[in-house]
Amino acid sequence: MRRMADIERDIAALGRPVFDWSSPTRLRDSHSAIAEWEAAHPTEAETYRRLSDERSAADAEELAAYRSQRARPRLPSSVVPTDTDALKGVREWLAGDAQWCLVLGNIGTGKSIAARWAVDQVARTGRRAYFERAFDVARLSTWNDAGRLDALEKCHLLALDDVGTEGASDHSRTSIRALLDARHERGNRTIVTSNLVNGKLSRWLGERITDRIRASHCKVVVDGESMRGQPNTKETT
Image (cartoon, rainbow, N blue to C red; front, side, top):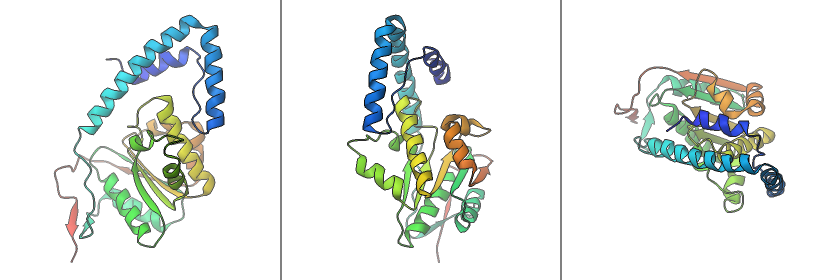
């Protein structure tokens, strides 16, 4: 199967308008623009449908591979995380005033555990805080899940885990970008964890969101081998 990036490049080259899922009005407008384009470019429209099927198959394969990984450990009330580099970085960010915290690094380096810890600390103060995985958020519907999306936009702290695994469809990327943009406008604090490093996360999020994050952020880059299978929590006394 071809790489997702190659499929996306071929789709972009067709010049087809994309769906804008950020609001019902924009969705209707983009739907009309797409219908006009397809009527004017029947050959390219057929090529798009073929490429779209190929992209869906590649997306499903990537998602299945991700879900086959061992589930992230949760934090029972009786344990605290091991003091990893990821946790140290998140702790320093939480004590400061930067709006964004980017926790980047390989799989199994404690990023998700550190983000969960921060959410727990904020929730203990009585403020709303949520930990969500990017591929779950990307599959929320503007209509059916409006209440949940509204809560994720307004909460004091959102930890958005594994950005870059949500799939490369127009809807997936637009959903994530719209949520992050809304949180920026509200001035709410956000943790983003990702395996995308060396500028890959910036390309994934796009120039607009990257520029907004750059204005007030802390970047925590964690290296090393995966700690999966090793104790990543310790009992409290």
